[in-house]
Length: 56
Image 1 (cartoon, rainbow, N blue to C red):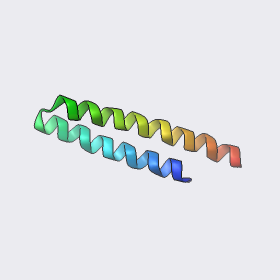
Image 2: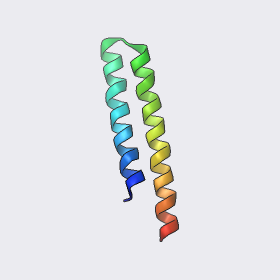
Image 3: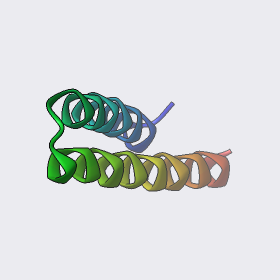
Image 4: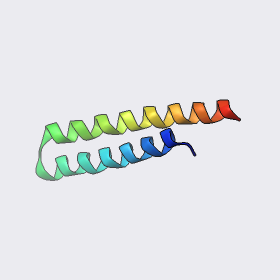
């Protein structure tokens, strides 16, 4: 597992927490920010996956 995969996983976890907080507080802006963070994390994790496969 490389650093991009780890950072992607952390970004997804942060996004999930932010999304849930937005739902709990009825704050659509925070909820949408969380969803965007999750997407960014998935993209970064995917980049790390490709990078990892290229190194093999």
